[in-house]
Length: 392
Image (cartoon, rainbow, N blue to C red; front, side, top):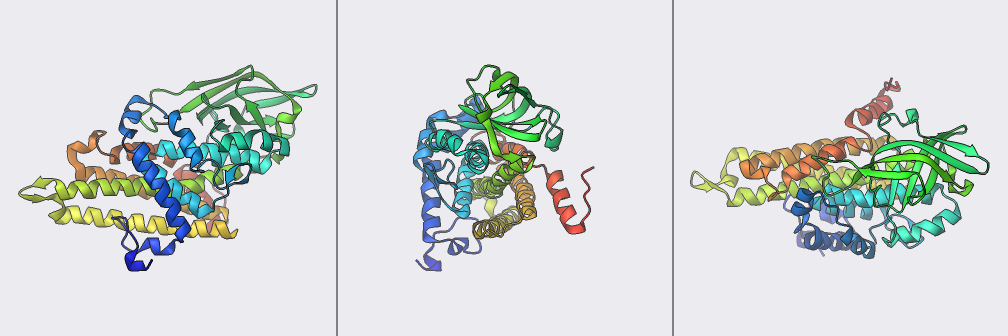
């Protein structure tokens, strides 16, 4: 297929698809078709009802979306770029659905895959890849968000067992999960534990009401004398390096996902501007509308180019941590601006769930906050540029 024959998205001004392989294009096409058929027709009602659609998890598993960047244990073993492209398509449907794939694969499964024992991997990863077990990742606490080193959840030895006590907050999927990866303070530093959620003393309560991520689930977890065998500890994770390695996987997915939400917002505004008549001609025929559309399209093109460059480096093994912050900070910031600008083209109709931009904007408030706020990523980059840490 020549460059001229490549199908393009309405926002594509630079023949972006020509930079992708046939396999990458096919993967994107498959996920886009799934989103168009299963998510977009239903997402407004799911969002309005605050419903996370567990019913589509098996289909996501059949597409190989759960732990798709991991190899073995029933996982698809896809490239970083393929994972990113899938994330963009899922978030074009809704951030909450892309977040599910991220929590499952980039956080919970990655923690076990990177740091778990072979027994833990064999027990949990095939179930999770098949969608038979949902996982969650318990790091954030009510008073320990951007500074996880200040967590107060603790794990104490009692004979051969561990006993966990503490509270985690804003934990995705915690009330529907079969397994939780919980990070806790020990006498030997911060360690991770694999916690079956039917263990006595584990309680997860959904956080409601929410104005964002309504088609997803976030919970507060209470851990009260949760007793675990010694084998529950992730043996190879010590200190914050363990959870941070998983957060970087999730942050990478956000770089792509945010641009998917931005692209969908743009397309909704573009389509509306061509059909909405004002003063005897369509909105698309006015200079101010065209400027908005052009500015949005330019940022979408730049955002996808940035995501692709970061993805290629990740696949090559050359990606540095600060470069993930470049992508997360820039693409979230631009995506939320695009969603808000797209809403202005829709006028009053844009505040209804008939159109996606304001729903995307609301969701992106959460995406912009989790896995490192704008401020945190700014300081990571500031330290890289100056050599001076400014976190305290």
